[in-house]
Length: 146
Image (tube, rainbow, N blue to C red; front, side, top):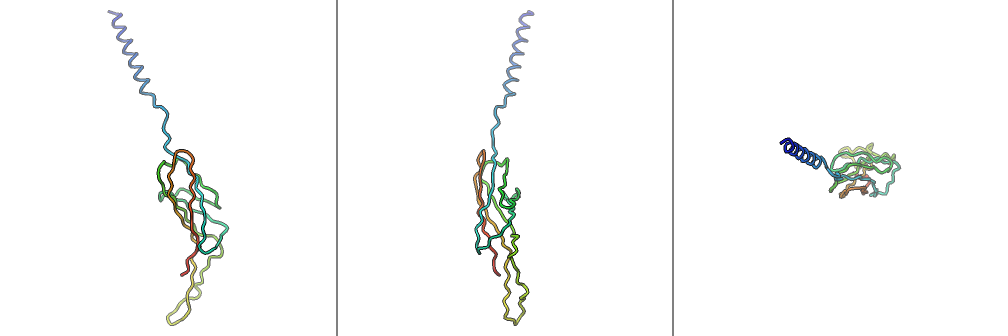
């Protein structure tokens, strides 16, 4: 009788140990993020070239960081999938001008010329995969004449 009870306890402990061991194994976690290196490629509408640009980078309309002096921005732990990347800036170039001293007044034939700052903007959509990804945002720069 003691041997039968001992066998039942031993079987119970063996099954409990096996269940505990099998349930505690989680396996290798799946990687569901990637790393993205973002750069910009400038295209000038009016032929202006500025020396210093700081770009504000957005992913899916969320600010992610800045590209300063054209240094690439690296974003880590980005979920895999299709994302929209945007870059925008205001030029720090000294050649942006505002000729508003020629104010228009009724009956006056003067034309007011105003050149907006050298704004740059661009966007692109890119699929992010597991691992390292590279995204180049084409931006278009050039002031508009009013």
